[in-house]
Length: 359
Length: 90
Image (cartoon, rainbow over all chains, first blue to last red; front, side, top):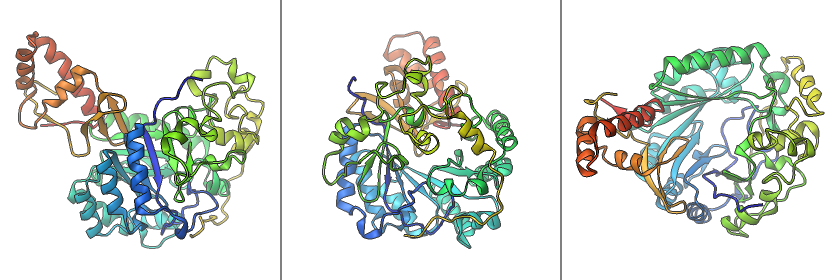
């Protein structure tokens, strides 16, 4: 296997603490305690190592990164390291004073999540009363300061029909970009599949909306759309290939090839307090587990799409086929495709959400 | 985008020299575009005061190249970036 290219992007999960409790949270089922989080100096060292390794984009995420008291210091450390610094936030907990301080620290960009276009729906999804109103207030302050803004809308059965209004909200808030991401059923979302899974009709309508709105809003609003792959014939090139472009650091310092990688029980992850980021990126067993094509089953090895989708998503193979080395079961050629179709037939459930736990 | 347009990089979009890959890049929200020499030269000229026409005239003189060719390349680059919301113009 040839030496991998350096990574472009790093997701730093600063904390698992969050005021919201969204039922599709991408944090693992087992959340990290605040007392086990990396300290300020360690994160600053990691940011410097990331820049030296070739990382250009840093995403500060959580949980809710504003729950870290040292957030402003961390942004400053990231900018000092030369990283493009993006804050991924629900907005809840971002005071006016903190936003002003983040501006002075050099924060490049804000990505604000929205759970719905009305307070009633958004607060029900987030499990936090008053959250929507707080968020709208924060959005105004973000616009006043002039931070470039991306709206991040996680979509599912309860809000996918509101997609046109969600795009209109992004424009009203002055966003340059909106990310429309359909729920991916790992972790907490998996426990809420019946409650959240959109219908095929909803997904097809959303694709048509995105296509029309992209054309209408060209030059005004960029629309990035992460469509669910369940109705596709072939899997998506997850992460652009395992260990090829990005990496993820958990609040306690474990270094992962993707944020869901902990769902693969056979993998063990290095911790940033024990090894350098460069050593982990190039030599760690978890990063090399699915790099290149040697690990692939014969079905993928011999496929003409081998270098297009790289066998798809390893976590999806684990979750649905029960084997992280299997062909992504989304693929029509996969012997496990019937399992995906069975999941798509899961009846819509009106049961209460299983909310993400509290740290 | 026209000759008379005045382009600039908006807040949150900036040029950066990537020491590891030894190339200039344009950084923006969720984007890192590797720039070839020509693109880097053009984007380095943007100051929010001079028009596309004025910038192309400067470059034509500096590189002793036909202004029509430079204008075509420049408008193509800037229009593409504007569609991606990585460039503002008035």
